[in-house]
Length: 269
Image (cartoon, rainbow, N blue to C red; front, side, top):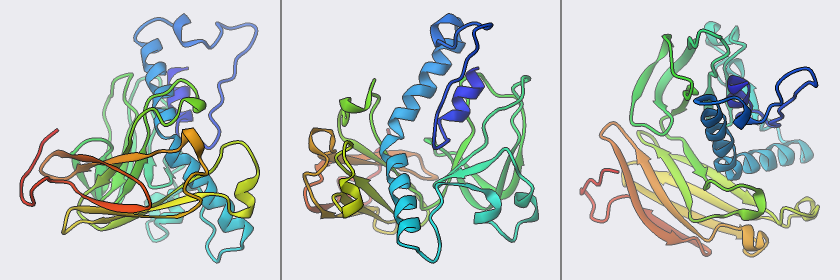
């Protein structure tokens, strides 16, 4: 059950099924460490809400307006790496937007990860791997193998107990260094079909790796998200040196943040 919930974090629909003949799938009925591992999975799902919500919007718009290349949210590796024959046969690893996910599906807790060519970060760490690469070995019950390519820009929210509790604090923009990158955060009112007629707020997040600066531009209806909209953000940069955090700034109609207070000064988290 723990591994199923961890896997579900990275699916468009996270759903926990049960049966009348088994122990109900409430985390607290399964004891530790499993209850805490499931709790962390649920918290991660909420933290990724602004990211997943934006991916859903992007996919909807690409299909509705007949884009030449539909922006599929969940993709097999073969779609992103069509020239890699190893990626073509992977069925338990996929791209959740810009996150490569390889959840544990074996009872012996063995991981079976394949990273295609490129520079990959273990998510939320400064640990770098260079693909193509296979990674195996036993992992703990709390571990969910996740990787981001250099240049990934990932908006991450706060731990909340329900969606109406958003934003719960400033928006964290995770940047995985080594390349320039961008991401479009999309917010709406969360209630109506107004998004179908363009009632959204778009925040284009743009990372300049050489300058170590995040710039953002806001378009659309600035107040459409209401009290659930994010009003402040900060940057967490993961690079080969370590993990660095910027100051916090108001989103407003646009702005920029240098990760280091003084260029050249390194701040470790």
